[in-house]
Length: 228
Image (cartoon, rainbow, N blue to C red; front, side, top):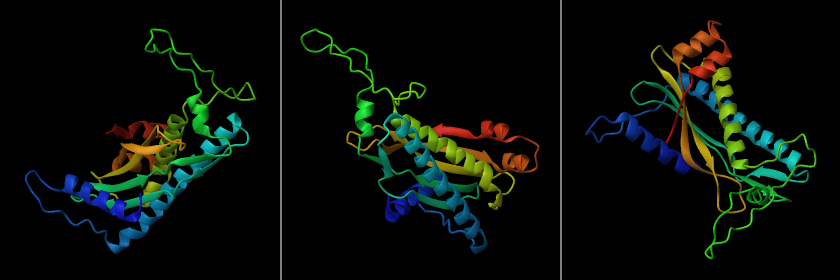
């Protein structure tokens, strides 16, 4: 997603979240100058979280296919702003697909076991054999997309709990991170963004974490997750 697409997406979100029933006027969402710096810093932390998740996936893939090399197809993109009615802050995270080189991780995924399928003549289609890592302790990588998606989710949750304190959130406001969910791509790339995952935490829960009234694990459980 390039900068233009991000801008378009943000306008759509503003139109959906900021316009009342029957209203057609968009609500301005420009940040005050004193808040932009904090938003930029938090955006940087989300970008770093996505990069770190990609590195973790690359390390995991090399355990299964030692000579594999993974790379982002494009750089992670983050757009941050406050919600149009003062509900808090929203950050849109565009998660890049990952391209596998040397050995195709997509081929590894395609060779996992599948339930036998009945073909046209009534016979069962053969079940393929999965690729087993050289080290028997390492579990096979049966669903790279799901692992990538979970690594992204965990990394962004950690970033929210570690770096959101500088955001100028007030009581009753929330922090929402909207992140692409990884799904299968019908090509040699192992992932593409389709659905959306919403991660939301209240300012009160962030304050309780900062003051030590709840643990990080407790705060993690209070993050609301919604999928669309």
